[in-house]
Length: 321
Image: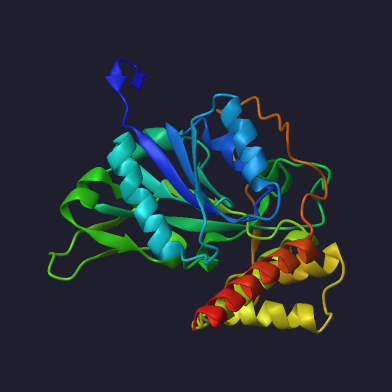
């Protein structure tokens, strides 16, 4: 894409999504001003996520949809395949594997993210640190565009997670696989090591908790799926918050505000510092949402639909024995 007489790098995102109806339109409306293409693998969503994505596609936005018929949310395997297929089909220079609750931003809100990615070394692996945004009592709960509503984040020194950036050069010359969560790109054994660089000028604005219903849906569906795969190691935060739900300790948005501060941490954070860090939206106006509704998430329905499909799969496997 020409920019100031220079051909800009072609940048794509790949995302595996499930039950993200409250944020998926925000993700697309924002990132259409950054990415040349957004490739989605829709993993058996039971909410309006597929409907919203299809409507956005009909608008002519740079979205490419694929549908997963396997209910298991094996993110590492499926997102890795999605990434390599995207390199093959669309020939981007760079791919960012992102979840629907992650937004690419500049660290200081002074640069366009594309300008930063245009300068990175394509023969190195790159990481971008998370910046986790949390609910607070000052937000406008009627605002449906998530980065505009949730503007307080944990201070950067609390963060330990990051997301990987993979170039076409790396994918071609160093076969490997994305980890769960897309935090790392693990190169196959026998290949020499690749230098890993942290892009300090960028952050991944992470919005994991957005409402009480969304919180319950996210945690309970994820917990049941993890148990069915016997994959519960290193999930202290998930087990802890599920127990809080089971104990009835969370019933209001105010309860959630207090709990969300140390969500996704494998240890309890003490003395959490929150900072006001609104996401820069100056380069991506207008941002009018057309399809997202209030009270978009129904946790009980999502959990029931998920459990029904798992029960059907269990019966099928038992019958085939």
